[in-house]
Image (cartoon, rainbow, N blue to C red; front, side, top):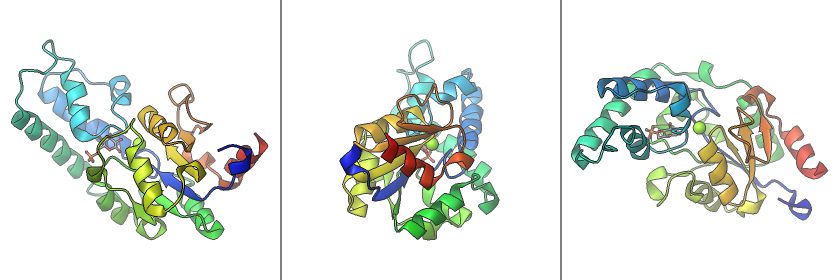
Length: 227
Ligand code: BG6
Ligand code: MG
């Protein structure tokens, strides 16, 4: 967004690691599977999987094997992806509104007050379930369906889909992400990127906060107009 295009017309949020800390459950669920397969898995490797869809994440894990995982059939991979998802579903069963990250409800509220619509651009097929459990559905105007886009993050598709569904030009959208791939997706979509987390990992974002409690609509607007 340049000076002539400062007006924010929509906010588009990632879910896992932004609205709620489910990134830790994805990590746990992949770790369980990787250990069953005898593949080393740690937090550093997990960073590469943030924002990446289920099958692409499995491919990255299997690529650590000496043959790059090329000997496995699609059926076998599908079974492992399902197994990870079952691990994950077990871990998120008890998630409720107490797991909404700090500052998120306040930001949703401020956006609503300002008449700025909210879109969701999550790669997760469990997003609908989580939004229901977190009881934040009423704030979200549009959920982009990850199954309806050709390319996952870091491609811009899911953010563009959300903007299109909101009827807003991407140049007037602010995207919020905790993952490097997600920030890349926002930038490729031509949006203003807000990164939440490690400034080094999210260095391509236009504006970075270390944690969700530091997200503030007025601060972001102020930053954008002051540039
Ligand atoms: C993203 C997460 O939001 O969703 C990834 O950051 C996850 O870790 C991806 O793999 C897909 O999620 P799911 O729930 O469909 O397996
Ligand atoms: Mg995320």
